[in-house]
Length: 434
Image (cartoon, rainbow, N blue to C red; front, side, top):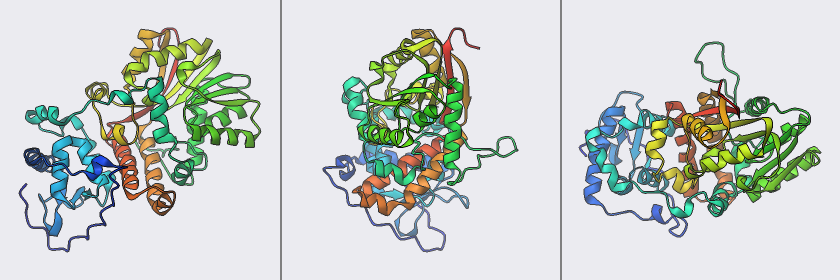
């Protein structure tokens, strides 16, 4: 890396380096020694900074390359550790470097949005063969088999109901909200914290409407969350069976249903989707397919087809990505898989349609996208999570965990802002597509 003198201003002080527990975070605690790969990483960093217009700040007020005012900032506190981590394991190393405090940014989402735009062009074409040096395959132990799913789901959803309550709104809904929008086409959603519960109800009601849920509807929900969708369906007069693999979610959802007086209409079961029984007029699932895993998509859709009564409707809410990016990343072990959501894969809309058509009688009838609404939902969650850092620590979560989740929420928000990710509400019925 070559550096240039910084503009005449004092360098901001480096934040305290997190204390890393090597038993809890072994790969964050370990700084690899990979000098040749680190040198390559340094050259690539210079290229990426130039291509994306980034300002890379080094200790002592130096800068890697000048950038325009207002450019996204990557602030390196420990450049050697950063480059050796990235050189050894690419984007996993990039994430682990953040967890360890090797780098930071005054606007993490802006930096990650710049990096997320057109990710296939991030690395120069002539150097993409280097990907073979650091790309890993997902561990077989994290595959979402029946046993694997029982291990994977609790790693995220059983962390602590109190933790999720710190940054989710009172509905405890952990999926994209649907905000009112301004009159101008393309205008960003009008997202405020006070408006988030109503926006979550708007999303849930739209999904229930898509599935045709009303009085007497026999409804299966795959992926309970903390019970808000089941509550709203029961309030419509539906009879709900909801499935989850999270013991924490099970306990709170059952309690909320009992407190609302809907025990006779809504039942929550600790059950894998593959073991679903019965016949239902409607099946709904909000952002659960991402945890299924590509090898198991055919079985997932066969389950939907098997339990759906004649004339029934399936309404899914799914995070999606472009089909070519999904295909390219489908066998790649990512930082998100390693530290946040083991065992899953975000599908493309094409993959949903083709898998359902190839393995079942179900066909996609409608698919509506609202990715910008997810970006705003994530912004509100991230701001709330950051504001409650003290309470996160009081619950027993260390600084590395806090940084992990800050990066996860900002990374997700950036994906939607850059258009790399989208979210769809999808209607499937038996028969030909419209």
